[in-house]
Amino acid sequence: MNRRSILRITAALLLVLSATGSAAPREPVAAQQLPVFPAKTPPMGWNSWNTFGCDIAEATVRRAAAALVRSGMRDAGYRNVVVDDCWYEPQRDTAGNLRADRARFPSGMAALGDYLHSRGLRFGLYMSPNVRTCAQFTGAYPGSTGSGDRELGDARTFAAWGVDYLKYDWCHGAGSTRTARAASTTMRDALAATGRPITYSINPNSNFPGAPGETESWRGVAHLARSTEDIQPVWDTGHTNEHPMGVRNIIEVLSGLPDRPAPGYWNDPDMLEVGVHDVNGHPGLNHEEARTHLSMWAMFAAPLIAGNDPSRMSPADHDLLTNPEVLAVDQDPLGHAAHRVTGGDHQVWTRPLQQGTAVALYNRSDQPARISTTPAELRLPPGDHGIRNLWTGHHYRTTDPISADVPAHGTVLLRIDSARR
Ligand code: GAL
Image 1: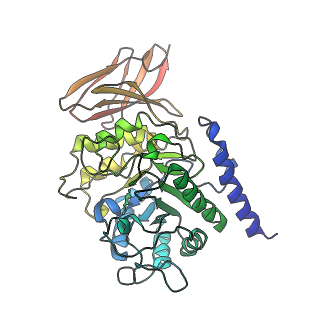
Image 2: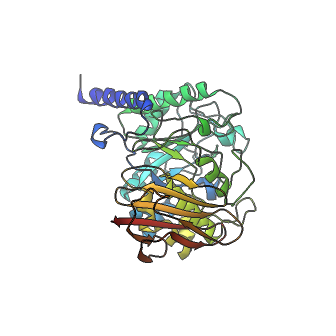
Image 3: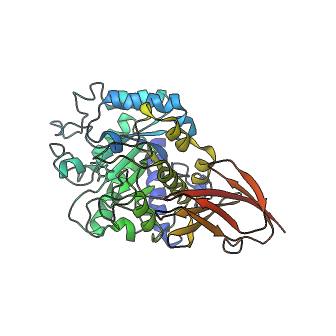
């Protein structure tokens, strides 16, 4: 058996083992046990969909990639550049292979992958397990190129193009959780068989009756799985888990997810809307809402996939997206997600970190509020605590209740560094 075959079998086995390990959800898997597993912390990157929709071309992607590098976003961690729906010719070639849209991606996908790799970025692509992609299913794009029954060949194509990240989107109005799981698992195994470590992101939630992302764990099937329907750049659509959802609506769903993330598996509350404006008539999130979006995604150990146009980013959005202390909460090696300590309109959430504890004081209401908690409520020992506001850098010590004035729709994100008796 040659080295490549051994690698392939090892990759397939590791993924299968991680699938069967789902009975012990709280135990993070030690990184050294999963040498080919590329998602030890929540993946970060950029995706074309939230700003550009189907209106993409290789020039769009290269411009965004160049801006990620220039702006420092790449170095802050946003490395996966994911080309979402509508990148392909509406039909496969005569041999049944996927191919890039020749007018909009004239250099082809392998060349785009080379370009991204040469800039220290990873290359991501979108595809669907059914007959049609989501844009084809909704009629926004012609043809039918889904990977259903073509998983092995398509996975080989992706690997040959240098793809490092696959977003695999169910987007179908029919099916059961069982069929969605089987289809996602088939692609997982096809990716593993290529021997290339490809981050595998699934969306078992889109257009799906029963919204199984909310009720099922997909640990072992993929590195990240969408928990909620599609996000829009709005605060509140009034929806629980139906399309479209606002930031506030997604936070409600996340408080009750059936499985907790740990290194190797992440719940995906959808891509970031920070800096996304003028989409579908939405003006976008205000500054406080954008801060809540990032603060709470960091508390949940969520993948951070920027959805803005990085070549036209405001300084304020840049500072939100690249705040190193907030990103460090998201990427904390323990990989634990926050849990809610108090509910209602003025919420307190806590997340254990490798060093210290992150606390979010989240004001869901339309009025400013003072939100307070205590070391006891946070299960910290009594005594003197160092409190750092991660957005402002303000630092103080206290033995008293921890409180802050929180604007409407805003979040104060704190790290409690130490406690001395
Ligand atoms: C949706 C998915 C979006 C985007 C879109 C593309 O199902 O949730 O994130 O990928 O398909 O058509």
